[in-house]
Length: 310
Image 1 (cartoon, rainbow, N blue to C red):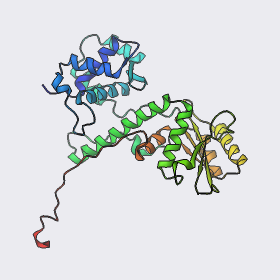
Image 2: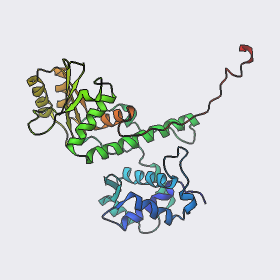
Image 3: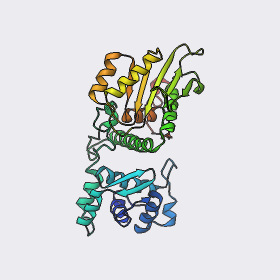
Image 4: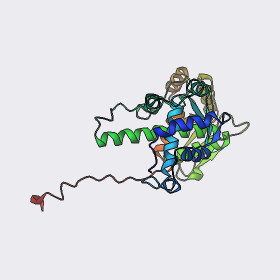
């Protein structure tokens, strides 16, 4: 047999997690579902076309993604899956095998749900990252479907990045921010970006030298927060910049900003704000903390077959 499509993994993942209410490592869920669905050892060796991952693990992962979007499961930490209270209630209400229409609803009914929204703050991410697929697959061209798939993969990776960023230590988060800014072109070398965060940092977590002599600098505040960042925090960073006689600052957080914080940053014209979704988007664009694979898409070369041009 071939590896079942990801929708077939949804109910087995749900039932397995219902038997492990304290959660389970993803690798254990992968193996349990492969066994429950009768995936042979040979089929478990089958890889994605990119060679990046076994197909059965990839499809179990997408099944869990759908359960997360439906609010039934969560990833309290990377590589660990656990039902939510809503998930437990759903299982209790659906003790018999799910109907095909119920599986279909879980598989495609929540694709427009964004994971880990930036608290109650306003989003600074570009619409392309947040927009859900709007094209009906039944009438979509192959190019349209490819675009949908790439958009969905991007949103999924962004959600995973936010989960990972939320679990790292504050000091490592500051390092990630500086790595990202360097990949974006700030500083001639990585040594031009230095982390200075810690007690008594005066609201400054990093300093970027834009020239060899360090005459022009950008100051950075990097906060791994769960709550929304308000105007007082941004205003405090502005005060820290004034104390350094600096005229450029970047405030980056894993959460979001209130409208008052955004308006204050615009009014002083010295601070750039980056929220969690925007940071995830930048990490994808500049390949920080992620790996990318190249897919060759064949297209006819009409010039080659133009006899009149030869």
